[in-house]
Length: 213
Image (cartoon, rainbow, N blue to C red):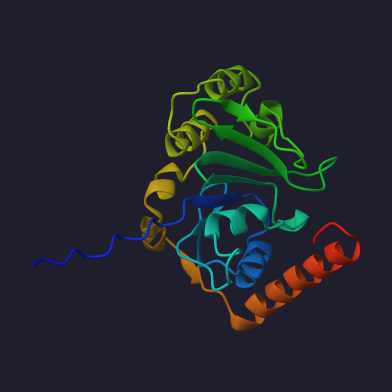
């Protein structure tokens, strides 16, 4: 009788491109609960999710945790690209009027979604933060109206349209470690503890307010 080997765990599909102070980005990366590799490029610093977090279920999705994590103004602006639950998700951490995270959510066979409770970002904002010519907006709009791509393909196409680096790292995050000046940041127990305490406090407050059973 032959035994089958366990299937390989899919790596997380997610990265952030941060345009702020590299010292501030390094400080931000040290407080991660998701294994990251951070490396400078010409105009951006890329932070790639490279493994599973230490946090317990249901907070054990590395891509979702990184997508949901705020970026300080001094470390931004930033654009994030993630595959989450079969969807392509782009996050926008801008400046000026935008204080929170903006979201673009796309699903195969459907296209753009409007999830309730999320602050949606528009194509013009992505183009502005990526420092592209205004005419690129029309290309991006046409691309996001496509419905027959896979999430990973859509994310890489958006990055290519915006002339952003790192698209290959979405499919092969292990390559991030070989980039020049790359530095790995693993979750520290103190940061995991702080995250879990914050989650517990949030759940407790929502229960007190009657939002949870």
